[in-house]
Amino acid sequence: MESWSIKAICASVVALCASLLGGWDILAQAMLAVIVLDVAAGLLRAGYEKRLNSSCMRKGLFRKAGYFVAVLLAVMLDCSLFNHAPAARTLVISYVIVNESLSVLEHLAAMGVPLPAELKEMLMKLRNRQQEKE
Image 1 (cartoon, helix red, strand yellow):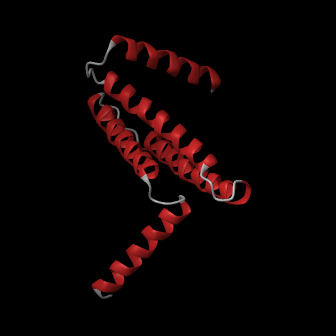
Image 2 (cartoon, one colour; image 1 turned 180 degrees about the horizontal axis):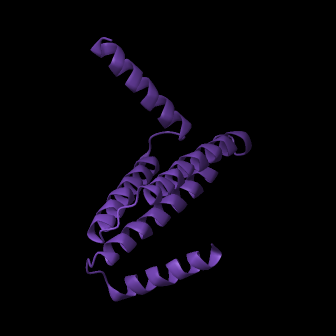
């Protein structure tokens, strides 16, 4: 295959993905950035604690794929109910950004990165609430 056709296929796939996510604005970019940061921090933590586990990582990647499905559903909801206004999309992406940001901070705290005591306390409370819901 020629290089221009590979580039055209890649560009088409990226454009389709951006379209399905409701555009490539700062929210979508931030969501992708914190998801990548969380995966990287999770890998660093697993290496730091010497407990790398492929099934645990697979479960986390499926959850992250679920985030993209949730955004797609929110975009479809916005198109059908809110006349393309990004209400549900903004809500879902904001939730993902906050959730993944907390996860990154939790990984860093577990590796001994110095964080403010108030932040550590908040993370412990949030983790305990999440474990109670599961």
